[in-house]
Image (cartoon, rainbow, N blue to C red; front, side, top):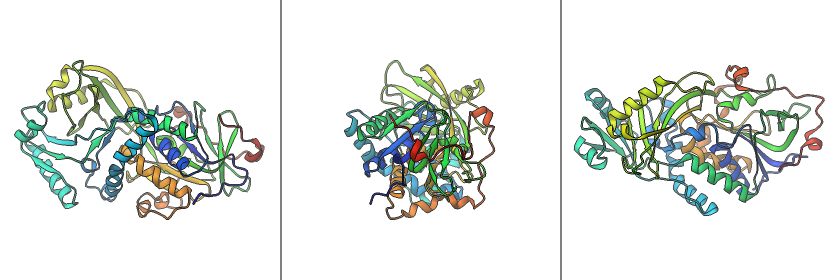
Length: 419
C-alpha cells in the first residue's frame, strides 16, 4: 500500500540527512513506489558514516544495561539482513560492498580482563546468543598475530564487518539509479509547517526556499534534534558522542588479522585492501571535532598490546566523528506527534549495523504497512510528551532552526524543482 501524498507536495518523502541511514531510507522508500528527495547539509556520507569502523556486531556490542539488552533483537535482525542487503546493493551497482564474514574475537590481556571476559561469556550465554570460548592457544591459531600474553578470548562467528565508505558509495548510486533526487551542500535545514501549525509539510533551506513533501524523515544523525521548530515541534533527545579513530595501512597487503579483534578500550577492524581501522574513543564533548594526541596514543597503545604488529603499519588518517546518542542508547524510529514527521536517528554506535532494518521499518511506516513489533523499542514518544531538544551551542554547529514564517507562502506554490 502506497501512502497518499499531502496535497500540494512536490515529493512523497523528503529525507533530511545523507548518511547511511538517510540513504537506506530513501532507497527503500523509492522501491516502495514513493517519490523521494534527499537533502544533505554538507557532503553525502561525510559525517559519522565516513568515520565508522563498520562493525556488524550485535553479540559483542551487547552490554549489561537493560536498554542494550532490549535492543539486542534489533541488532540481530539487522545483522541477518546485511548479506542480502549487500548483495542487492552489489547487483544494483555492479560494485563490491566490502562485507566481510570472518567473525569477531574478544580478547582478554591479563587476569583481571580474563575474569571479566568469563562474566561476559556467561552473560551472552544467558541471552541465548552463541559465542565460542577460546583458550590462548586456540585464539592464536585463529589469529596468529595476537600478543603472546593473551589470557582468554571468545569468538562471535556471526559478528561481521563492512566498509561503510564503500557501502555509502553504493547506496548513492543505487538511489540515483532508482530515481531518488539527491542534493548535497544545501546548508542548514529547518522543518516547515503548514500555516495552521498542524502538520510538517516540508523543509526550508538556508537560501529561504522551501521543499514541500508529504512526509519528512529526519535522519540527520547527531544534528537531528536541531531541525525541530522551537515552541512548535518537540525535538528528540539526541546528543553528539565524539569518537576518535585511526586508519592504518599495511604496505604488504591484508592478513595481519582476519576478522575484527576487540579488547578493553580498543578494536581493530580489517579491510580487504590491507587497511585497518583502530578505534574508538567515547567522549562527551558536544560538537567538538578536533583530534587529540592523547586519544591517538591510547588507541595505538591498546592496539599494540593486542596485536604487536600494528606498530609496523603506516598511519594514514586520524578521524573524528559524532555518534548520535540517546538517553537509553536505543535508536529513535517512528512517527512524531506532528503529522508528516518521521524520526530515524539516535543509532549511537550501531548506525551501520542497523541501516538495513531502519530502512525497512521506515519504509513500512511511510506506506502505512502493518506495524512491526520491534518499533516499540524505538518509539520516539518513549521519552515523554515534553521531550525537548538537547541543549546545544548552535553557534558551534551552524544550526538554524526557525519557527514558521507567516511571510513564506504555502510550500505547494513555492517548492523549487529538485535537481
